[in-house]
Length: 336
Image (cartoon, rainbow, N blue to C red; front, side, top):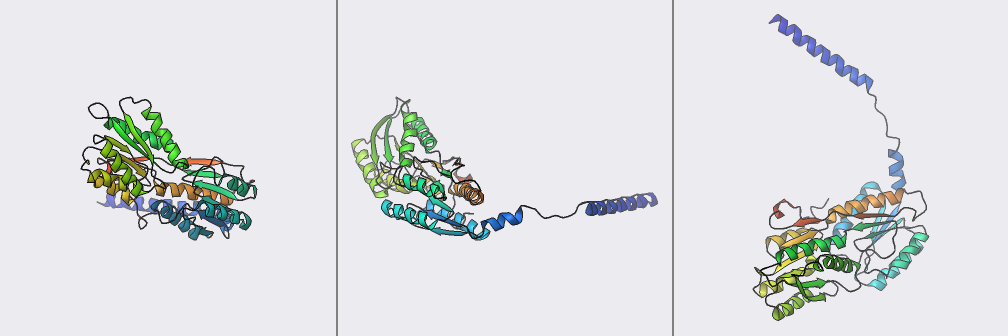
């Protein structure tokens, strides 16, 4: 017993000496980059010009941009275009005169803001395009690879509407001028053109992603083609109308609906309630994190504006009945 006690005391003393040695060997120090990082952000200004506030997408992005600005001490504001392209163009024109450090823009189409965004960068303002980009590449773009998104939707519909079915598919689109809708249609074509077993019976625009219009289009197509097999939907908010038409026609078990969106609460609800059977999320919280990182890079950039151009396609996530319980369908209360 005495031997064991001596061994225990020796181990304890060794541990004490070792701990003390570490404490003396490791001195604290300040991160030389830290103070400059925070000081460089103070007083900077970021302005968000969305197509429209009040949508889950724009509200989610804005909440995360605002939270970061508050934390790091720079200014953040929103200039809402309210689905008015002319008003959005005037806002950007005014901002070029005001000279904020960064403008974040959600474009309504490919061309309307293109020249203004190039002008803003020539004036020394970093421009980050969000969700929908013009044909002019600026400091940054954050959004989905929409062509891939379309391919993922089309592959699933083709898999469901192959042999043993009518093979008939309805394609719903957004506004004809929308780059998002155009890229999505290209993704559909990449798959459907190689799938002779599938027959597209109609391709129609839902206007400005209008749910009521999606519903009326789907109702008419179901009347013309009661054996319709699938619908390639354009966006979850719009496809609420699509799903309503399918349900009211008594075709819920027959018509396979694929939709997409930012992966919010509606995404999970749609799968759980059978509004759509397949969903591709472009993950608004993930996009907002990428966007915030691009904003920080732009605010610290000492090079001439436009020297660096970065595209960040956010990863896409597929939701279906088999995995929906494992998905995080965010709300404005839970988004971080």
